[in-house]
Amino acid sequence: MSKDIKVTELTGNVFADMGLPDAEEALAKAEIASRICDIMARRKLTQARLAAMLGVDQPKVSALVRGRLDGFSSDRLFRFLNALGRDVEIVIKPKRRGAKRGGIRVVTG
Image (cartoon, rainbow, N blue to C red; front, side):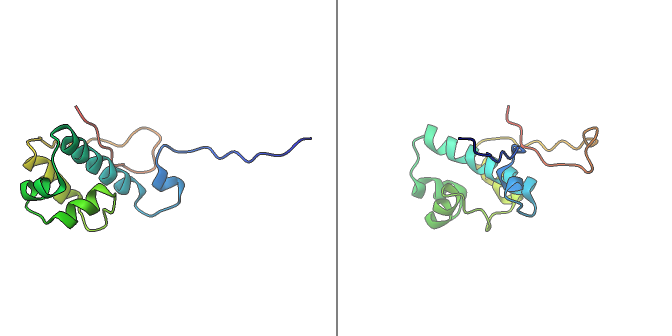
């Protein structure tokens, strides 16, 4: 018995794979939020304590932890990282060879 199996090659960006607009920005925000959650876990912070450190209310931290990032700009997430003692560097360089346009990427060091 032979069945045809449809295989879809993924791009490495789940937002692009789902056909969502602004997929690179969505992935970057998700990666930044993930770093904030990592810091929260390493420091064993409650959502309430993290909210106080970031200057927001606890429901905002809950939204961030749950990946509901529509209410957060990249700039705001950068400021959260700064409040947690992290530097944020923005590097502007020519687009990658073969790319149609420039992209957004989060790299941690």
